[in-house]
Image (cartoon, rainbow over all chains, first blue to last red):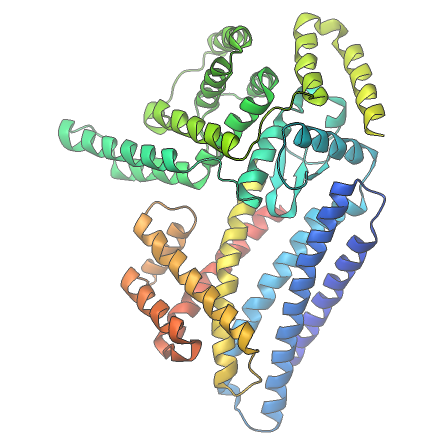
Length: 377
Length: 130
């Protein structure tokens, strides 16, 4: 078993070494992507050191066994620890190889444009550190592996400016998870505690038929992921403006029940309500009213209605608390709109063009993308 | 954020906790068997990481609703592993004095926690790779 494990670690070491080599020699990509390659390469070098260390431990065990200084029964615990470490290291190498290096190796023109677009948007709102690598080939919608600094967007999204505002939501995850800029905290925690107490009081004082497990589930979902999702929506709306509101409406058209929540996301109806509130708070009353009018029509047409416990799961107070937390984070970290923001202006203009003249929109969009590409060269 | 982003974040948290705890038992057992121990600097790092990891686990139990670890704690409780705040705090206090002061019982508890974390990491990893 020891020899077999030593061999398995050797195979892993070769893979880690190859990753480091591949990432170090990659130069024909934007500078932000090169920096992320350097960081992932550094992380892989650390993994490689750990692989070598475990291999060394195994060889020492082998030597001591041969010298009869220890017995087989004594090494079980340590061998099990080494085996668990192997599984952990192998999972890490698999993820880095498949979800980062694979995309860097296959990096194409569309990825280059999307990475440059992401960089421009990142810098125009004064976000810290370096912008993420953006690739255009995810099988679902936008997603982010924050610690690897990579954002995935749907195929051919480089031709569709209307969905680009969602990049800002992904930026929120990177700021919160990887760059440790807390988008929510104090207000949210206090409000969640207060909401839980209020629900418990309803059971005690009014004998409301609400199960304690439901209250735990509400708290768990908010802490586990909902608060972050709501904070990322708030950040995107604050930094981008109406384009994010329109983009959200566009995305909601594909949802069969906007009142239904998931384990990882609150209901789209509640998220939309918050986005409209922030748009109004920022003075975009006209856009907010137009979005709301279409939204109400959409609900009416698709006959979507509120689900049980909807208001228990989506109290206004929590959305407001997170909105205020995000406002403070923006202020504290200087994440604000620069005066010169040509790329953000194009995203807002694209929605304006689409709404004013849908039939001519495609031609306008092609021109806008061509202009962006010229600017990025 | 898609399901993938969220699962990946959870994976990172769980595997980070796993790594710190597993490294501690590994180093302790290495020393017990008379293998070449890591340098003093590395041992101090492992010790500090263990203390922090135990703190995260016990804090989590206090917060009750706190994200990913609550599921892990429930699983451990169902397996009759004593992971009460009191127990975790006493292991942490001993760890503070040096890794070698940890008892066999302490190591056994940490090992059971890493077993559960390893399984959970594997489940999340498979979801990422789907």
